[in-house]
Image 1: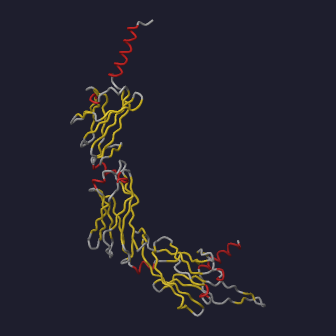
Image 2: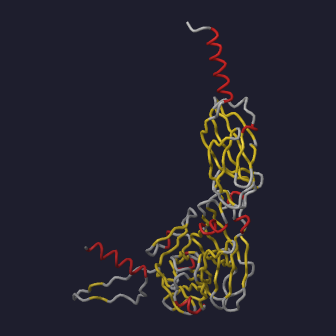
Image 3: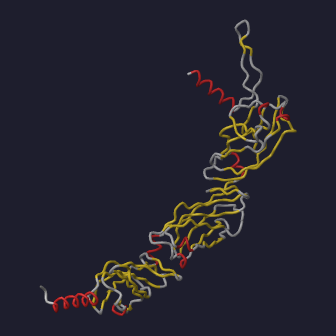
Length: 401
């Protein structure tokens, strides 16, 4: 049997050693404080208010005073800020100290003895700006309630310029609160600059990427090329050119890609059809054109004229004008629906721009040639060829294969 005095000594020794013995380091988390909030991530930006360290230990921590722990850097020694239990035999010691000018090695001390040497990484301004990137930078032009991306624009047409981009940083965007982001809209012809400051919210600064926009503070009408330049701090992130296209040149490039018909049925639903509809089946009907500009990246406003025509020529009583924003991508344009009762003598619609006919939407079916009794062909009446007729021809040729 073990003597009673030896058992009592073993209990005393175990308790004394565990309470006063060297704790076991289990982990270190580096973070920083900024505007009253603590973020546990590294490196620590130079703009932070303080460095925060959370050091995990294993061993009894209730009886340990925080004065046993300290952190020694090359410039100073800092006492522990707090000590708190972490469950079971674990506890955490936190430190808070000013941000050093550069990354440093710090000694974690327990009762004056070094437990571990830690690296406190500090993010310098040059390092942050080098890692900052700008993705999907876009210049957009506003025409009333419509906004379209553009690398070229018609002269004397737009109502406003804006720029948008996705800011990305491998270390988070928090330093941009100090450095700032701005966009400069530069008129190359006059040399005038229109700077716009980009403000980031707290949620954006807390992430590593953010979508930001800037609006040109004035609305000058460009007569020459423009540049839109993005800046962060003293670094230029991107520069985009906005070319100005004369209105006449832009309109000459506008073309019709496809011709359809817009129909309003008895249920109030509008749908489109490629073939001329039966007028009695529709409540209202109108031409529908798929349009696109010919200038790559260019955007402009065009004023179109829709004219109804019959065998005797254009019908002055059935005309309509409408504006549309045209880009280099397909755009469906169905500006007006006419009552079927007003189209009894109408054979189709013309789409005109600047006095020239862009396309014809014919309401009359394609006439067929008839064979006479002598084996000859009776020629069909005059017919204006249209996109709908072309589609019908292609469909019939496919069925013959």
